[in-house]
Image 1 (cartoon, rainbow, N blue to C red):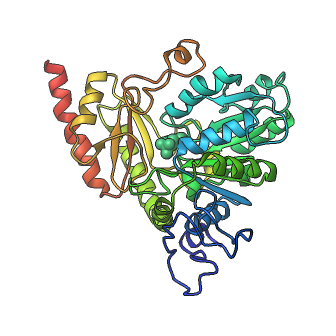
Image 2 (image 1 turned 90 degrees about the horizontal axis):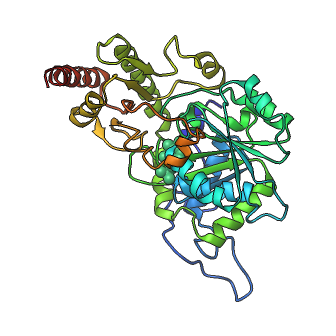
Image 3 (image 1 turned 180 degrees about the vertical axis):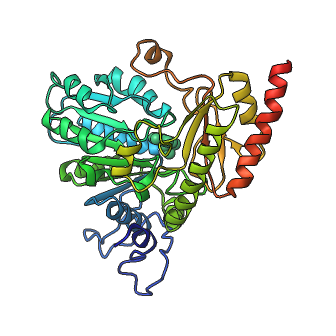
Length: 399
Ligand SMILES: *Cc1c(COP(=O)(O)O)cnc(C)c1O
């Protein structure tokens, strides 16, 4: 079935005798047992809850995975996954502790890797995942059992990696692949189908879609890894609570219509920026000259709703962010409303200077503006940006 049908239709309440048409919110911490030593399907919501179970099944199904997990945030998901894969936490088998990361990762992911995982013995290596041949050479001497973590398209520079090609090279070299699929969401791209071993999302973005819940989700076909994640989720108590799971299920149903609208608007906005006098460089994978456009067309069902641009002037970029009226200045993306940000000062300000200085992490242009296109009318969005930039250009020149 088509993805539009699959996001909208799923079994809302397996086993519920009243057959509700939307998933009930099982807002309970405990479940009564038959007796002291007989446990039902659920006993305690940290370990499992029916609302969360519907969500986790739906995530697994939409990502073509056997196992799905919902965590209290994207970072909780990433942290749990990386500790299971690289430090062997929750697992019986030893692991290598070698992590290759694609360039241009979410700032919080870099902070986690640099400040929490590296000091605990994870060896972090940087790799250019946009060039499969260069990656093959880079991985030649990697010790088997390593993991590679990438975002495609990456945030905020929108570098595109050939997920299938990267997966081949990684597997040939004895490693495994994790894809952070937040930027496009499972509506537009399914990395497990392209050969990734695990896919995760900050569900705070598109999957929730309304900017009212923080959540992270994971899907995989690897049973041993799934066992470790189940163990850690219960042992540490970082699973998504019932109400947040319910909000996420509600948001997920409209994922398709939201993204279709937003992708169409983002392409128009990117083309407008390309023609404009104030944007000196535009990053959007749907533009003809974007180096990753053809790869993206092969592996995804759309270009996404995130775009970035430079103005050549940090002050102008800052004023555009602060003074547009329809774009809220805010971190995050994928909400029903359009947002705008200066990644260097906002979402990526947490990247440690040591990582930038060593070259392990790419420095972002300081004048880079990131736009997340929401559900507003695209003509309104364009005229808002156009008139704000026109006012600000005059003031920057005259001051
Ligand atoms: C936001 C984001 C995260 C972190 O998710 P939270 O829900 O904020 O914890 C991870 N990866 C990417 C690509 C993100 O955009």
